[in-house]
Length: 176
Image 1 (cartoon, helix red, strand yellow):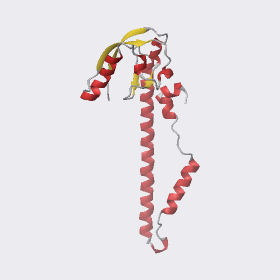
Image 2 (cartoon, helix red, strand yellow):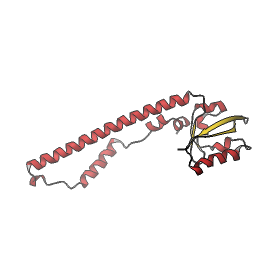
Image 3 (cartoon, one colour):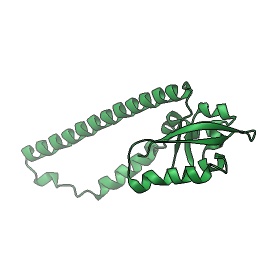
Image 4 (cartoon, one colour):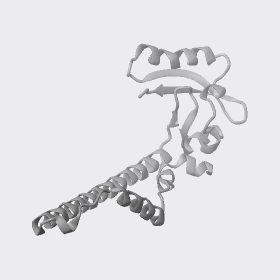
């Protein structure tokens, strides 16, 4: 997967793989063979009508569910597009990290430090903190998780440019 695709939720969601129709058909046939079918010769006309009615209701339910899922997917794609537009055009540096401080998400705003967003994915935030600030930053990262405080954490420290120089930045961390 390219760095661009890793950083773009829209591309990630469109890359979700689904089984092709032949595989779906095979699986459906296997499940249908496992169903214990009633003996139509012993059923009354009304029982057969009721069975067909129930099958139609289940098909309509499935069709409605598919439509709801499509609508939900379109809404999510729209929100992802909006999120991408906002993060690509803001001046603040926006990133998402895991609990070990590894970058999961970084946008174009990181170019202010000389880094392409894809370069940062998987790297640890602490690798970019000035050595003299590292202890303070690590302590601040651990404090909210230990206290359970949901309020955003704000900390000033020096962040390394790609060329090795440092820039003072303020980071506001929100844990969720």
